[in-house]
Image 1 (cartoon, rainbow, N blue to C red):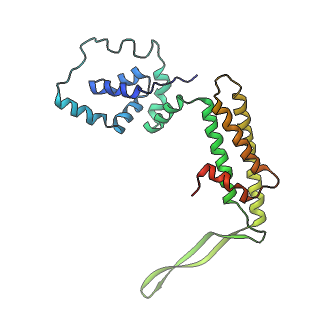
Image 2 (image 1 turned 180 degrees about the vertical axis):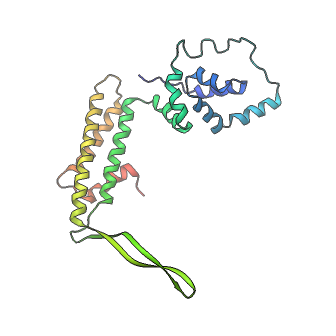
Image 3 (image 1 turned 120 degrees about the vertical axis):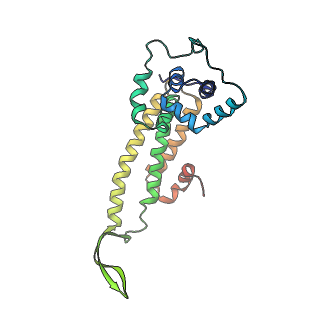
Length: 242
């Protein structure tokens, strides 16, 4: 199970930073990456605050061989370097911050967020790929060639060759149905995994209730009588009504 970081970890790290603790020591003490510490310092203006406090009172460094971090540092044979060393070398601080935030998330909530993203993509595709009638056709410029001509002492580009791509309604509908089928299959698979995870004692009532509404909304898409107008309410639930 992922380690849960205390909500006040950042505040405690800030206090130690202002007191003069080094980046590496802060990262080891609070079990976060070096880049995460640097990101906090930059994002929340710790350096400026440290400078302001230093101007009002003399800096008090920790005595030689101090034990301030005793009992609070990383455990013996800790895996900090193994966990963060590779990532901290190649990933930006913002990405590492996201990784740290993900660690405190419940796996069930992570799956739920992915279900919502997949579901939203399916609803959005209904609007994008909607075909009004069988005569509908989309004409799109695929490529073109130009030559430079001088007109009234000014150079202009004149098209000499153009190639268009035509999409007829039946082509768009067939492509959409194939993509929709794959997307719905993935959504059903994620919902099934979610329901299996609900069987654990750790699932909350909220986590159990929200999947039922989603399953009902999904039936609006897969139902035989569903048309694009029926989806306006579902679309509004996800993206908000304008």
